[in-house]
Image (cartoon, rainbow, N blue to C red):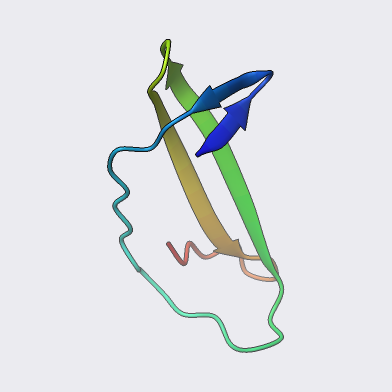
Length: 58
């Protein structure tokens, strides 16, 4: 479950595509976007990138 503003939203499906790897201690950045927010279900997109090279990890 995640919060958008003051609304509780339920995840019904989570899919992850791993494109690269990160090493222990390596800095990463996470960017999350709420694409659609309904009454009880939301759709979000999340990207995980290496901070130094900006390569997408997942």
